[in-house]
Image (cartoon, rainbow, N blue to C red; front, side):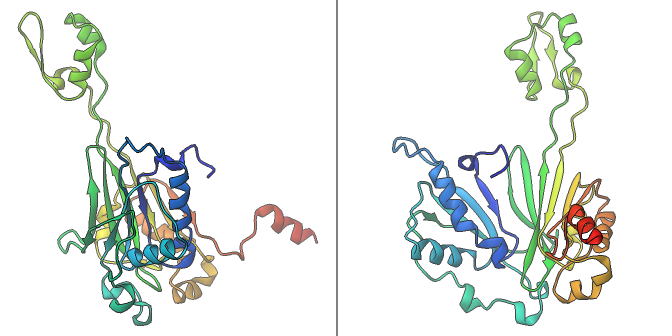
Length: 288
């Protein structure tokens, strides 16, 4: 709501786990996106993709169905199949509870069920010419996931001075070279993009972890290696380490250890307990 991104431009949503504070807002968000969608019947609406743990399809069908919510766009839920070691035994949701057994919502389209790739120890969610998005396993009270959004490398800048020396004026040919195409000049010379492009610009990598007390396997470490930004929860302070682990959460020290293991450039902490107060309120309390 505070960002410059309009709700109607959202095309993909990622849910880390099914605890209420992370999923109760999803039906309302979909309705907000619908309110910001162009209802033109002549225009085909793109499908909004939602990724999350097994059980998310049934949750949305019940929530949207009981509230009589109709959307102005189609959506598909792609469920990640968890592994038994992602939570204590009492936190493993039964197949009966999460079964995909009810009819599709009127605006729902069939989604994929994505299993863990044993070779990479992660889940490939999707990739296109701009991004690759993967998920990886976390340990929490119920199955939880982290997500890595990796931008593809971008072409380097054009060597415009060299192009001018070669007699090539700014125009469509610049775009073709930037796009990786070879160009034939008027004198018959074939110009390769590698001759007139600077080194490619490495794609940025952002990793966002859901609630967890640890990461599982080698997948998170290689997927998040060298992340430009790693977002990690820090529910309790370092002095409450044992309590944090008992409840499936982390401390700043635990988050820093993960960031260090991944060689992340920047660590961002979130998901703070309500016991933490802003510094201004803490100082007022001390004066009081």
